[in-house]
Image (cartoon, rainbow, N blue to C red; front, side, top):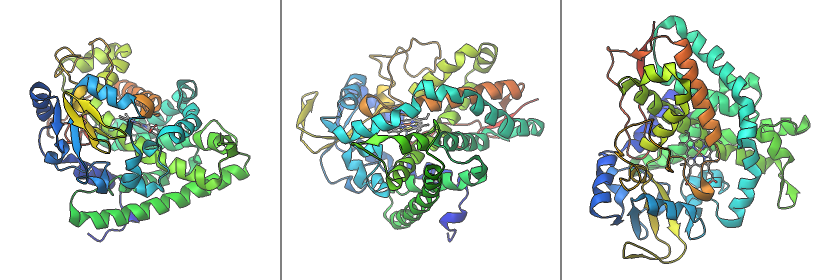
Length: 424
Ligand code: HEM
């Protein structure tokens, strides 16, 4: 394949990431068995699925364990002092000059989180409801109405990017270029490979993508500073923020913004694919939700429990700990099987049933503890607007019988690749 990183389409970049993180095997079945037979796995549980982890190159270099139960996953994720994330800076984080929030620990993480958090709180995010709704309806769905059929994933790929770049504070006249930027962001994620042969090429592409993104973001940052650093968006806020007693320089703002990109678009796209798949394949559900829109938030929450995008999170032990009588040495990796905790029979009744009426209980699809997803309100708002607009504008939406029924797949990142639908 001699296609360059610069003319890679967004669709191709997304599929490449899906292929990389798809792996093989039934992760739900493997976790169900582990929960019932042994709540701790000694060794690299995830390896059997053949997917890369954010331990990157360090995978296989130190003792590794996996946990499956709700209470164990909660205990690890909530305690960022004893279960750290800094190792990510040497894996996937190497593409971000180490300045990736996900890979920060302790005081550094607290400070950076405090800087970023206000831009993502519901008070700020909710102001975006009308503009988001407008973009979804006018720029996407109204153009689709006469077609009477589509793969909903074309919509699902485009919307989060448009919303995210607006929230970041990119100029709106750049919007055609957003798909290119998003493809670069995906190339960074795809830089993590298990296959040694693909590794070098993927790393090279990721390196180029990181540099390209730096250039475009830096240009916007410099421009925004020259215009007076105004605005409620992320770039505006970062330009005015104080960090460790001083203002952030252009390089720091650029690097922070760049580190947000891989976390924001693709996760929302994949969640969209799972929500729509479950909505369209669960008997009677779409009619209920169409008639009662107060069910939309429940639909989203139950999807994030039932099919979390990322099936596991990894942490490193900062001291010796013990679970279920097994001693885990300091410096070990713990694979926290979120996909298992979200279906733990001890917490959820009939956990393998997709039931939007279930009583809300803590699940971990947006993480938990200090690293819990900073963008969850953005993601939920976007999904809410998208689902409502689809139900409003595409009458009698149903699966297209000429295409296979969509299936949610993937051992590391889950989602449905295509959702072919018809409407009247
Ligand atoms: C449905 C969509 C999304 C899902 C399922 C999701 C999931 C997650 C999860 C599970 C984590 C925790 C990672 C860990 O503990 O290691 C996380 C962290 C994060 N997410 Fe999201 N995310 C979504 C959308 C977004 C959006 C729209 C943004 C936009 C800014 C975003 C930005 C972040 C950031 C910056 C972090 C790191 C936070 C930290 O380390 O303190 N995410 N996300």
